[in-house]
Image 1: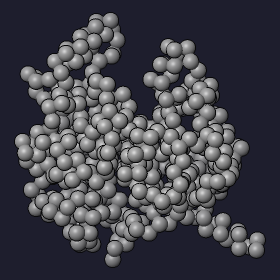
Image 2 (image 1 turned 90 degrees about the horizontal axis):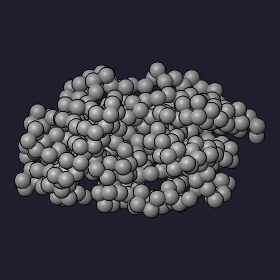
Image 3 (image 1 turned 60 degrees about the vertical axis):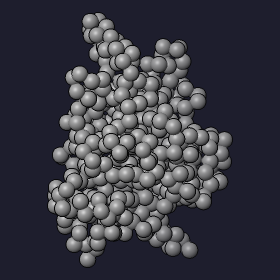
Image 4 (image 1 turned 45 degrees about the vertical axis):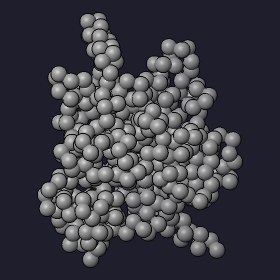
Length: 421
């Protein structure tokens, strides 16, 4: 019975109701990382089901997702950040056997949420590819700064090289390539900024494709996907997937929600219904007064500076300025520099009040992380980490459509191996 598939087009409330015929309240609560009481309030209509959890709810409805405890393929997590890509693949049977992340603060957050026993490598550059454990899927959000619009502009202004000319980050793609060449995984997923396609008049991307297709002999597919289908944030990223043998993989199998969420779905609730997150306590939100802490409201000096900066650039005919949003908005892309002034996403608190930044917990929700995800680092580091992360539901949806092809390649290899014996 639990392999039944429910229509993905159902509204969240109806989907929740239908899933309750398949799962107990406790089982659903465990799968969504919330309390039994929270599921009960959703069922009774006392609180609205949060949009940032809708993808997780829909993922549960897929037959492949009904048994997430089954580990169907092994993954290697390179340039892992705080584990966003891994999280999405784990939802569909991925078992991580190797992790690499150079940033110590990101490593702290990663290990707080994934207390692994396998080897965790810092700098992958000097690491012997032969020592990487065998795995079925290589995951890599290789550093994007050399290819992003902001990154290219900054490096140009400093007279520094960018793209593959950046010896510290641009060439890290080739570390991904050498590990693929050595371990020959059944599949891979690479993630980067949209600007990778057009960088250096398309030459950078042509080199990447030539490496993956011609040198490594993988079947390669790529697509730009906007995370705004799942969370209230315009965030376009290029996804490159590859398979070691021919498949029938198609991007048309993606189930991208048409009804996009708005910002109110991820904001702290000030009406007394905000659930206490044990690992947060009152760090971001004062539950006694049902209010976001005052420290997230911009100081008068910073608010005046941002308004003055925007007026100056508007007068000069430029488009620079802060991004003021309301609960009905979809935000700009959250960046790693959000900790500096929060200017790309400032939440209005009324015409007569200064706006505020999103809290780190709200940023986590904006990236699709469940409230069970722990934030053990400072606000500054948390903003950097979520600004550099992937939208988790996007990764989960891609993992869903990749999985049958990953399994098919594995089975094909096993069959060929048997025939050769």
